[in-house]
Structures are given as C-alpha cells and as structure tokens.
Image (cartoon, rainbow, N blue to C red; front, side, top):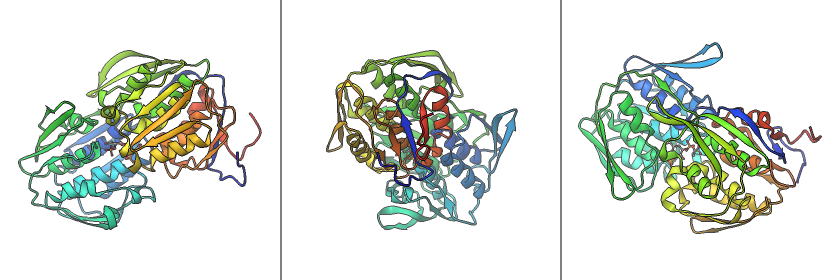
Length: 457
Ligand SMILES: O=C(O)C1=C[C@@H](OP(=O)(O)O)[C@@H](O)[C@H](O)C1
Ligand SMILES: C=C(OP(=O)(O)O)C(=O)O
C-alpha cells in the first residue's frame, strides 16, 4: 500500500473480528430533499424530524432559502427539528446569486423542475463531479413546459434556466429509469394547469408521489406494463404544510449491513430503516445470497414503511441479479460488489448502465478498485461480474474516490475483512450522505482511521 505523503482526508480500514451493537443510520436522503422542497411550496409550517444533515441535503436547504422559503434548524434536547415556512405553489422568488448544488444530483435535478415553472431566471452550478453529470435528461422534458435552458456542451452545469409563468402541462415517458427525472417533471407540473403525466417502464422510488399525496396534492398512480407505472398529477393544487418523519436511509444502512454479513462473528440491530419496496432490492438480493437478515417491528411511519433490521454474519453465495431489479437498488451496487467479492461463486449484476453517470463512473470504479484489491472482476457491456472464491480478496490498495461517497464507504467496508488494509485517498465525500460514518462504524468494532496515523490502535 502506498503511504507517500497521504492527504489528511485519506482513511484506511483494517481487518476486524466482527461488528456488534445497535445503531441508527442517518435519515433518508431522498425523503429529506423532498421534505424541504415540498415544505417550501406548501402554505404554513412544515416540521421535519429525522432530516439527513448531510451536505447534499444542506445544499437543498440553502437553495430553498435563496428561493424565498424560511428554513430553520432547532435543537430540541439534542434532537434536530427543521421548520420550513413555504411560499405556496408558484411563490418562489428569483435567487439573487448562483444556486450551488455541491455534489448532489437529486438537488440539482429536482430543483430544476421547480424552477422550470416559476417565471424567473436562475443559475445553477455544482462541484466537479456534478458538473460532469448529464442534465439533458431533465432539461429536455422541462423545456416542454415552456422553460428555457442554457448550459455547457452536453447539457452540463453550470446552467441557466428561465422558467415560464405560463406552463403547459406535459405527458412524458422517461427514457431512463430515473426517479430524479420523474420527480423533476412532477414538480414542474405542480405549477402547470391541468394534468401532468409521467410514464415509467420500470418503477423507480416513489417518495415524490407519496409525499405529494401527504401534502394534499391530487395524483393517481396506475400500473404500466409488467414493471412500470403511470403517474398523473393535477396541477396547481394548494399544498398544505404537513409534518414529516424521515426514516433511516436503507442506502446508508447497506454499509453496516454488508460489513456485518462479511466480517466473522457479527450481530447488529439497525433501528428504524426505511423498507420501501422500491428501495429494497439490495436486501432481497442479499437474502437470495443466503444472508441472515430479519425484519422486526415492521410498521408505517409518515407514509413510508420502516422496520428494525437484525443482521448476523453469514457466508454468501453468488447469484445473478436481474436488470429489472437495478432501479430498486441503484445506489447499492458498489457495496453489493464488495459483498460479491467475499462470496462463494459468481455474482453477475445486470443492467448497470446508469452507474456510469453517478457521482463517478461506479461501474469502472468498482471493477478497477476490486481488481486492485486482488478480486477477479469483469465488465461485459453494462454488466458487472465478480468471481467470489469464498475468501475475501487480499486488499492492500489505495482507492481513488473521485468525489464519490459510496465508493469511499464501500472500500472502507472491504478493508474490514481483507488481509492487508484498504485505504481511500479522500473520504470527505462521505459527508454528503453519511456524516459520522467512520465514527459510527468504529463504535461497532471497525478500525477506520486516518491514513496518516500509522500505528495500530
Ligand atoms: O430521486 C432520488 O432521490 C434519487 C434517485 C436516484 O437517481 P436517478 O434518478 O438518477 O436514478 C439515486 O441514484 C439518487 O441517489 C437519489
Ligand atoms: C447517486 C446519488 O446521489 P445524487 O444523484 O443525488 O448525487 C447517491 O447518493 O448515490
């Protein structure tokens, strides 16, 4: 492993015997973004509990303030409570400065939906990762409402949007399975008269639909083909402020869950994790691989299903993950690839094209990073194939994170079982979705520490 002048943001993870304890992961990122956006459009005061205070969500909070909403954080005996006083549909005001969405694709794309049907001009940018990501997938349908966009080549940020005050409603069939595209169109449709319809051939996470209903919008969701949905929203509703309780993020829970499954003698209980079926593909997949995962206290809170998860370490067996499951676990493939590298037999993950346009090219990052750690991995088209030997790979590499939180966390989990430690060159991106990750994992028994600290604890 190279230790030449490591950055203070570089972390290493060393092998541990097992993880144990009880934990809560931070709030769901998707639901947190939406609570702030819908709160800013509702009339009255929306109180949000359990909001994810990660950088991505804080970027959304800052943007909603720039657009005229009042967004306040209060500390209630150690519990953060967020209050949003909304402007009403169509009531957002022109931002005086550039909207900086940082590393967050969800903030950028959903907000573009809101901006598209407000008669004002806004400019949006983001960090080096977000400025590489494709935005035409949203600007194209949003132009159909009457909005105008000026962007860099290929529809990249920075981008200017001139919203329309005379929107026409739109019927749009999404060409990629993307909840961000669906949500951008629905949010634009909020300030268009008549009905806006989004058709998706594969159902994606439905937090926008659930929360729109919770805030009093009228919408219908019907099946479309074998795996799709047709969502129709009646425009210009009066959104009423509504309390939101954000469940723990299943995408964040995935890291301690896989860590417990692959390390020797582990037993974890994760409290209050969202179990929305359109987010739960990883857990279904791990169970098919033989994982010992038990759902306890299944309940519905704030319109979303939640449960406590009990996890015990288990030997995993490779399987084929069908392409039509990809949308329900799209952010979980990096950590599934780590699980697959520790399993017996071949895991084939099909239909991962969308991974190429996340915070980094996750298909390449996982293939190259796992290979550098000694695993046998191939990419065939959009499929990732990992050959598990039943033993963890050797480890002993420093992985370039490229501003991608999930790549950083995945390789730190891998280091918990490899013979040689695994390091990541810059772990700072983890704060976008999982602030306190290293501390929380170490409290359970992990050994994650700055690469600059060379002595074993
Ligand atoms: O709508 C959302 O909150 C999200 C949708 C997904 O993106 P795509 O819509 O690009 O698949 C996911 O990767 C992202 O982390 C959050
Ligand atoms: C893809 C992700 O987020 P976003 O698109 O919001 O940047 C993610 O969190 O893995």
